[in-house]
Length: 390
Image (tube, rainbow, N blue to C red; front, top):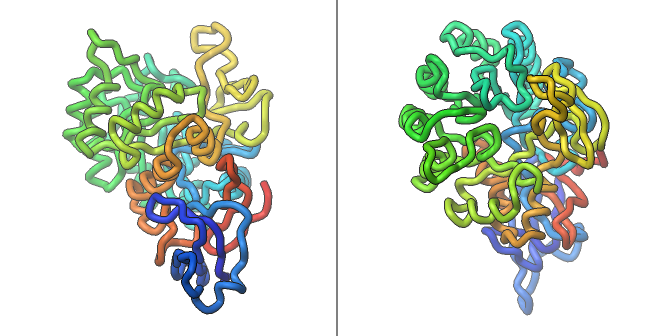
């Protein structure tokens, strides 16, 4: 598509009232702010006027599905539909996240998502498990959790053909620190999550190369001022500039005040808003399955139908929002737009090496969302093409 868009736009962290964004094929060719009282460049009057504010589209590094299907369904068509649903909701770049599975099913899932990545529907694979802590397993089947072995890791990396970008792990498991080193040596981000690790163990993992906190606060011991835990170690790692903190800032998983505090403490450049979306995202309440476990969504909150000990309801089982919903919510709760958009796009894009995403600038892929005054998505452009509704 070749086109020129005109309207308000977020450029270099500032919303400018009148901007030309020229799209050439799948790239942004130029971004030109128009200054009142000066002669506009040729073609400005013929540009397509957008009704709303143009923002860079979002990047989700932790997403299990949406629109009624999930990557954990282990079905090619279902996975493609989940990815396309996310694209249409403003998340034009994402990792396909799998949960804890048997070795055979996990290999099947990785092989399937590698094909989807080859097709450009997703930008890589995130393995959330199976090397997690039973005590903090959340919505992962505790009977399938296991210690890492080099043989299994090498098989999965081979099946993934370079598309595995991130692995969530509990570093306190046997060979957990080895796993961090195996992954980072292979160019894969090691993420600390679903863990009961101590402060010292997390610091050791960071020293070994871990550079992500999987949904900070969720799936780890609470931060108590007299007890060592993962949370302060991960915050310290982010404050020092080496760790990116995922936050499911949907108003359910983390309080809005906590979100603003974390961004104030470490900066939006060290925070990535993630959806942790399951199949229910964009669909609604009802019964679902996540990684073989029954989930019920009530008033937008997903929970296991039963906890591993048989009690009901079980733990929170992923999210039902999109990154666009999170950005809108946090701006309405006082987070500056530039910070929210950076956490929803530029920060995860930079971590994942997607240097052409997360900003409206020349040379970037033409991924644009147009939002209304409440920062709700009205239109989505992906790789230079306007997408239809979802």
